[in-house]
Amino acid sequence: MERENLSANDLAKHADLTPAAIYKYIGSKSLPKIDVMERLLGVFPKVSARWLLTGAGDMYEYESTGSGKMKLDPEDLDYEAKVELTTCREQLVLKDKEIEYLRQQVDNQQELLKLYRKLNDQVE
Image (cartoon, rainbow, N blue to C red; front, side):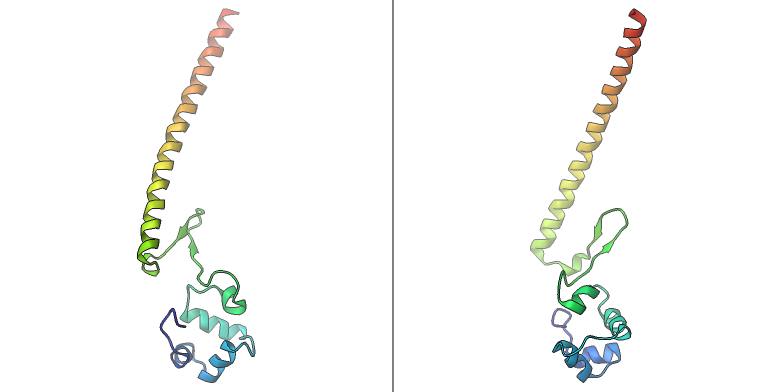
């Protein structure tokens, strides 16, 4: 709630719960039922359900784009993290270019090998 700048009363209003219920969950006196979890995750869609239930793991879940990449919302990052993310993206672009170059080299080597074998078969 603190990261989202919400009080227990605000959260209760957004999730259609009572402040007492929110305090009960915060105090770990009981676990929320599934419908309550759905309401809480509706208020905090980026929050991990696992973290909400157990306090374990990362607080925020980041959406997978299906390509093995993670989609991060830059608005959730501080300046240093934004700089690091930008640097990582630049390094990935350079690595992608390097991989493409190496693939071209492999293709060239395979073509040379085919030519060598063809010449070798002609000599024999």
